[in-house]
Image 1 (cartoon, rainbow, N blue to C red):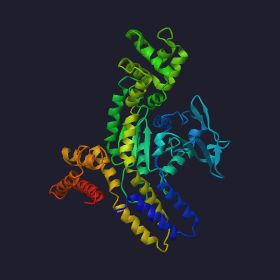
Image 2 (tube, helix red, strand yellow; image 1 turned 60 degrees about the vertical axis):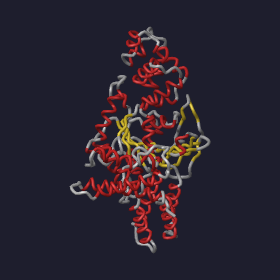
Image 3 (cartoon, one colour; image 1 turned 45 degrees about the horizontal axis):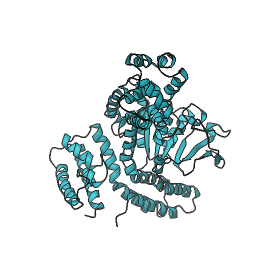
Image 4 (tube, rainbow, N blue to C red; image 1 turned 135 degrees about the vertical axis):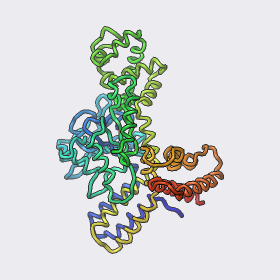
Length: 489
């Protein structure tokens, strides 16, 4: 019977308990690795200070849970897990965990550190009944302004540690502009694993994307061009899986749009065009020209805070285009904000490969333990770790998909498109990989796999092909062979 990489990793972690019997520190690490294999995928949200990390988390969760001000709690690593009932647990660096009371104000959670300084807190864990947390654990990290500061170093140590596996299986890296320091951090995250498994498990997010176009109605189009340029830049080759523009404030506002806010936007949309354009020409004009339009300055200031000038302009335009209810407007805002595309991207490329990414972290942890010194039985487990790593087709697929998206693989354009599909770039189910309709009879799948295998094996052995293209063809062959094995062909 064929086992999965997750099952193989779990078995090796269990066998290692015998090897490290009598070593409480090592056994604690193994306990953590075993627990991690049974958890949802851990997705860290990292980036520079004021990149909008908490806003993106709120947009993903659909509620204003993560604190977005510059308070002390934004300086502490915060985990968001699924829980049937809301809960908050504070983990001091010294002493037992503390259960905190869940308090809300204006719909937002009030977080405190129970009298501790941020430096005295290891992490906060928030349990919440949000559907995305059924398959994701979100980890909000302090802003990375400079790796010389203590709080920035804390983020770096937990994400790119040299002595222990990263706390995250994958990462969203938020930035307003991609600088050399951002690239260095992303490279460090990629290289942090002790395992030789090469993969790409980070996504760049051009956050606050609406600001790139100065809040113009076409700002997201401009941001999309900038994101594509970053994605295809040599500096990010093999470092990020892609770069996506997201207007986080718009997405967060859309998730929590109220009926009153919809009515405010509808009233703005109903203004005569000259009056509407005067009101929306700038943030200052929008707030203070109370003689024009239906709302007072307080209500307008609230809309501006919740949606930003771009969001106000966009919402007004969408109402004029036919969004006739709060639900319709919220749906349209979410789609235009980029957060829906980000969610699809995360699920397609990380969610469907969660087992491989979690196993990679466990194998990394085992390698680090076994490299500390010789132990009876340790060499055999290390050999098994290497065997499992060498068979990890899914991680090789992720790395090659990133290269294909960046346009750095010297394959003919039709071959590159087909390779991307076979590797799971559009979906990981067999029919999608093979370019078959979803209602294709199962009996046709083996024949299609055999035909594709024959073609890609021939391409891999053809003369005149560059080495990088040849290696890419071999990974495609491995992917097809893995599909054949899964179908027991």
